[in-house]
Image (cartoon, rainbow, N blue to C red; front, side, top):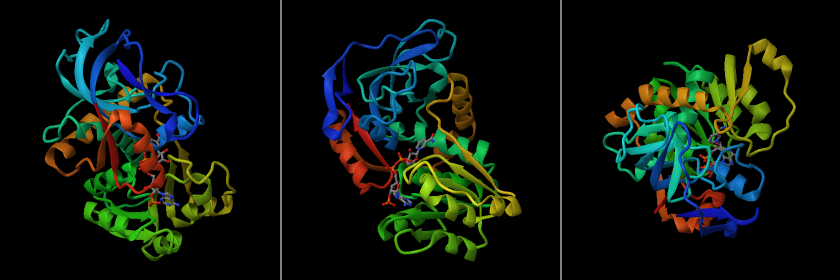
Length: 324
Ligand SMILES: NC(=O)c1ccc[n+]([C@@H]2O[C@H](COP(=O)([O-])OP(=O)(O)OC[C@H]3O[C@@H](n4cnc5c(N)ncnc54)[C@H](OP(=O)(O)O)[C@@H]3O)[C@@H](O)[C@H]2O)c1
């Protein structure tokens, strides 16, 4: 088969479409013939050499895919999945390829009303957003959530999901065009982080119960200022660095908590538990049309380098898909 190899860490040109051995599904895995995959920021870090795949994961990038079950590995005969099933999957890597072996606990059916191609836009964002807003952030109806990077793959999904929960949704983004798109997706308070102080805007609307943060260090202080009493900061990205000083006095007085999580390094069983939560609580919303995949553009998989250039320029809104 063919896959995108990272020849050596570096710029987008490091991604090359190469002939590689077919993966063999192990115990508890099925082989998926990939129809589409999607680009995630983590793939850019992996390409640059700063985010290696966890032990046992395929070396090719790609944290999600959609496709068709092509073969069943040992111990999956009673899993309910059959050859020919149309699926999408959360991966630890290996999605930028014609075939990938997937643990059965990380498979999801293609939701009704979503094309096989579009389904590749859903696994990583739905698992990340559901696990961080519901399991970790405990966001509930009537609460306020601040989502940074509202135009990102993660953000465009999080806006729709948080609105479905009945939360008030505030977002940041770096252009008015992205903020307009966020409003169309359901965001009620929009802040251009280039021209406005988001912590001040959050104070004006009474503060956030939960902040879903992709910036890390550079936003820590302003995030803590944005939270109301009992607020929860959930850090899922470090685009603004990994180190910062925190005002523990503010945290103590407001009884704040800070969480930081990553999906990729979680053990298989935890990923399976998240996937089953998503199937139960998110898939019905997708099937009802309350949440739609937001796809910025679709490129051929062999042009992964071009897709990475787009992602690094941040000109996209939503997901960038790569198809066979
Ligand atoms: N922990 C996990 O398990 C997990 C899983 C998936 C993703 N993530 C993280 O989530 C983040 C988003 O990932 P993605 O794949 O959705 O990437 P993406 O689509 O490329 O989104 C990145 C976004 O950040 C925005 N941005 C840049 N600087 C900003 C700032 N100062 N304030 C607010 N927004 C800013 C960019 O657009 P504008 O600047 O134009 O607004 C862009 O929309 C990444 O940090 C990724 O590592 C974490």
